Image (cartoon, rainbow, N blue to C red):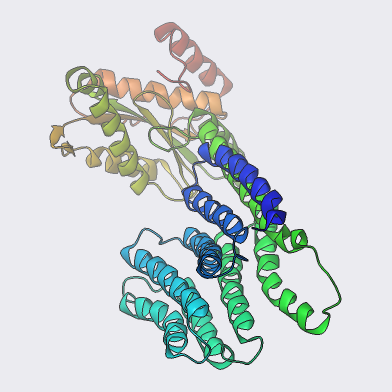
Length: 453
C-alpha cells in the first residue's frame, strides 16, 4: 500500500466538503455533475493507494483509478453541454463511460497485440460516432462533432501506437486521459466563455490538466533525471476545483442580482427596475424629442379569483398574463409587474398615442377568452390607462400619476367592459401636473401609483 498518496486523499476530501457546501446553495444545474466528478476523483486517489499491490488486486486497483479518472472528465464534459437532458446525450454519456472502461480493462488484462485491444480501441471512436449519427436530426450541435473528432483521432492513435514495444501501453493510457481532459477544456471554453475569474481559472486548469498527460511522458523519455513531485502533477486538479467554486459563486451572485431586480413569481422586472427603466426612457425621449408611452394595466376580477379559487390559481393567472403580455411587447419595451395585480408597460420610440392605444387594445383582447389553468376556466379582464410623454407629463412621477388616474377612470366607468383610457390631447404644463398630483392626494390618499396597490 502506497501511504505517500494519503495526503492527496485527505486534501481532495476536504476540497469536496468545501465544494459541496458551495454547490448546496447554487442554482446552477451543473453543480451536481461536478460534485459527482469530484467524488470519482477521490475514488481515483483512494485506488492509487493500492495499485502497486501484486497480482489481480493491483490490476483491479489500476482499472478503478483509471476508470474513475476518465469518468470524472466525461462527467465534466457532460455538465457543460446545453442539451444534456436529451435522450441522445444520455446515450452519449453511457457510450463514452462504457468504451473508456472497456479499453482500460483490456489494457490491464489483454497482452500486447491481442484482438481485444484492437476492438476496444476501435469502439472508442465508433461508439460516439454512432450515437452522433443516430441523433443528428434531433441534435446537431458543434460539441457533438468535437466529441466525434476527438475520439476518432484517439482511436486512430491507439491502433497505431498501443502495441509499440516498451512504452506502447503508457502512450495509450496517457492518450486516453489527454483526450478526456482536452475535451473538458474545449467544452468549458464553450460553456463558460465569459470574462470572469472563475471561467479563466477553470479553463486554464483543464488545459494544464490535459497537458500533464503529454508533459509527463515526454520528461520521462527525454529528461529521465529530472524529478517532479507528484503534487506538482496534481496541482491542475486543485486549480480546476477552485475555478468551479468561483463559477458557482459568480452564478449565485448573478442570481441574487436578478432576484433583486425581478419579480419572483413572473420573472418580470420589478418596481425598482421599472422605475430605473422609465427614468432612462424619459431621458432618451427628451434628448431625441420623440414621444414615449406608459401603459398601466390592472386586472379586473382578479380578487374574485383569489377569493373563490385560491391563491395558487391566482399565481397561475399572474404567470399566464405575464407570459401573454410579454409576447406582445417588443424587445425595446419594458414590461413590469408593479403591484399585486398591476402591470406596467413602457413603450419607447417610435411611438404615438395611436400606437399606444393599439397596443392597449391588443393586450385587452388577449384576455377576452377565458384562461385554461390546470383544467379550470378563469375569466379576467384588464383596465388600461395610457399616459404620453411629454404630452401628459414631463417627469416619471407625473407620468405614473397620469397613467394611473386614467386607469382608475376606466375601471370606475365600467368594471365589466375592459377598455382603455383615451384622454384628450392637451399640452403638459407645471400647473396641470400640480393639479394631477393634488387630485390623486385627495381622491386616492392611500395609493402611490408607482408602488404596489
